[in-house]
Structures are given as structure tokens and as C-alpha cells.
Amino acid sequence: MKFTDNLNLDEIFHCALSASEQGDHAQAIILLKECIQKEERAVYYYMLAAEHAEIGLYQYAIEEMKIALEKDPNLWIAKFQLSLLYLTISEIEEAATVWLELKESNATDYLKLFAEGLLLLQEENISLGIEKLELGIEANNENKPLNGDIENIIRTVTENNIREEQQNLKEESEFLLESKVNKDSAINKIFISKYQQDNNEN
Image 1 (tube, one colour):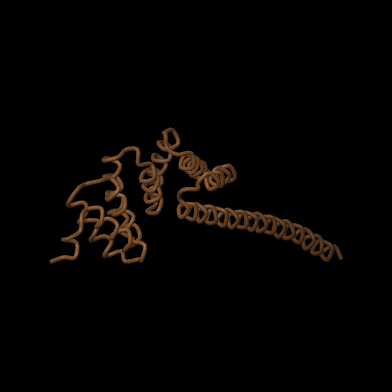
Image 2 (cartoon, rainbow, N blue to C red; image 1 turned 60 degrees about the horizontal axis):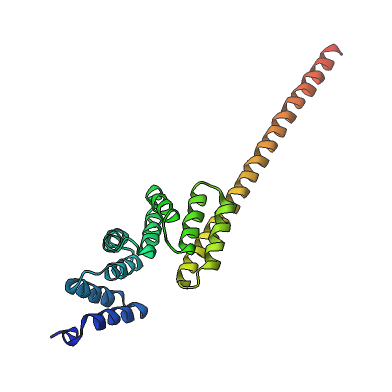
């Protein structure tokens, strides 16, 4: 006999949430699957996708997010998390498609700002993209953990941008130095040629 045999559906779901909060992903997954067996709700699939994402099973998570959205197309947070899952496995075009859909949807303002910001980053409009993401963080008072994810994206993009600028400066400096060396070499050849000519004349 399982301990859940005496629990109703809502009780099982809250036990799953409790297990998730304690980092017991295996137990959370078992309980969420039990919820789905009893009734296929969008929120159960959404939470199951989140658990699979936590343990690195991203393809499982993507399929479950899709099912959640089939059952509730207005579960905008699931749609945004789907885009982040695509981003995690480097399927950028799929992620961008979701961002565009979110940007033009009736989603909450902060999700639309996040989607717009990520689209701009994908288009390499870094400064404006970061500005939109920061506006989204300011507007998001209901999902603080998501703000942390966006801040990590901003940090990563900023660090990569700085590294790229440093690399570009390095390459430019190396090019100028190489040009100077080549120029000096040419000048040296002229001096050597002149020196040899003077010796021959003497």
C-alpha cells in the first residue's frame, strides 16, 4: 500500500510541490506522474517538465511543456520556459519562434519584455536587448526565480560581449603591429640596399 492511497489529487500534488522544494526530484517526478494518471492537467505537465529540466532531461521537459500548452494555450509561463529549454539545447531558431509568438501575444508584460529582449539579443542588438530584459525584471513581481534566470543571461551576454570586444582589440592591435613590422622590414631593406650600394661604390 502506497502512502498516497489515502490522499486525494490535490494532496498528492502538494506533496509533489513539497518534494520539489526540498530538492527531492525523484519523489516529485513519481508524485507528478501519479497526478497525471489520475487527471491530465496542464499544471501537472508543467511541473513535471520543470523537474525533468532540473535533472538535465531537456527533451523530456520540452515534450511535457508542449503537452502543458496543448492543454492550456494561455499558460504563458510554460511557453516562456519552453523557449529557455530550446535555448539550453542551442535550438535558437525554435526559441526565437516562441519569443516572437510571446511578444505578439496577450502574455503578461514582463514575459513579453523578456521575449522581446531575447529576440534583440538573438539579432545581436545587445544594448537594447539587455535594456528590455532589465525592464522585464523590474516589471516582474510574481516570479522572482525567473528574474534570476534572466540576470544570468544578462551576465553571460555581457561577459561574452566584453570578451569579444577585447578579442577584437587584440586582433586589431596585432594587425597594426604586424603592419608596422612589415613596414619596418621594408624600410630596413631599403637601408641595407643603400648600404650595399655605397660599399660597392667605394
